[in-house]
Amino acid sequence: MSSTNLDSVTTLTFDIFGTVLDLAGSLIPPLNRLLTACDAPSALTGEQVWAQWRLRQRIEQYQDNMLMLGHSGYLPVKRKALMYTLRSLKVDFTSENLDEFMKAYQLLTPFKDAIDGLIRLSNKYRLVMLSNGEHHYLEYLAKNRIGIDFDQILSAETVSQFKPHPSVYRFAAKRLDLEPQQIMMVAAHSFDILGARHSGFRGAYVNRYDLPYDESDYIPDITTKNFYDLCDTLEV
Image (cartoon, rainbow, N blue to C red; front, side, top):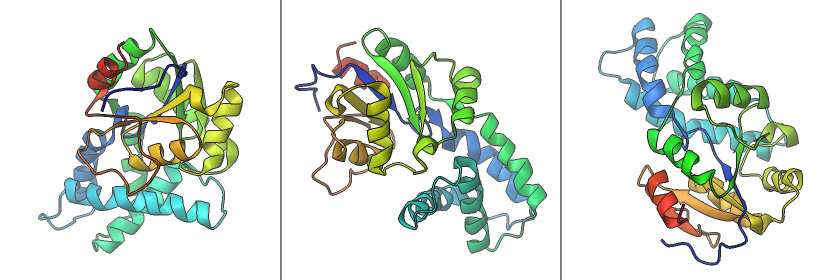
């Protein structure tokens, strides 16, 4: 989809987990090691656990939002979701097993197209990280795993909600001192684009997982396969 009427956009906000950072590629090998440590059935693979675990993570975040429990922490939510997933798969584990596995979150690897794209996009736009992760963790990732100097790093933790709650996007616009239409959310998850568009942002859906978009009136302005296509579409 080509860009139209995006002249007002001065700032790009980025989802990080799964859009810039390759979660599956980073976490499936440690998942396989976790399964071995837990004496899980040999037929069960890290890929299978990942598929179920990823879906459960979203449910945990939505539950926190719906029950008004606040932002319970990105990494704690991932841990709780993994515990649920392993139990549903009848895998016995210990706290020590999970502690060892969670160290993998300090070693997340970015997609090459994302790094190349961020460098190109910085020539035209302000780059802002807008993520569900805790602020201190996002700073660590920006410095040690992504290596990009974002203009600002904004965490959903600040408003005690998880995306796609509207308060996250409204907070970002206020903090950046911009009108929503001056900001474009870039994400590989349709829920994030939906939330941003609902809040008046423009949206670029980087559909790197080849998934359908949600049935919604809040559709992306741009849909691309990767950051290279995004840069070409935005003529950067």
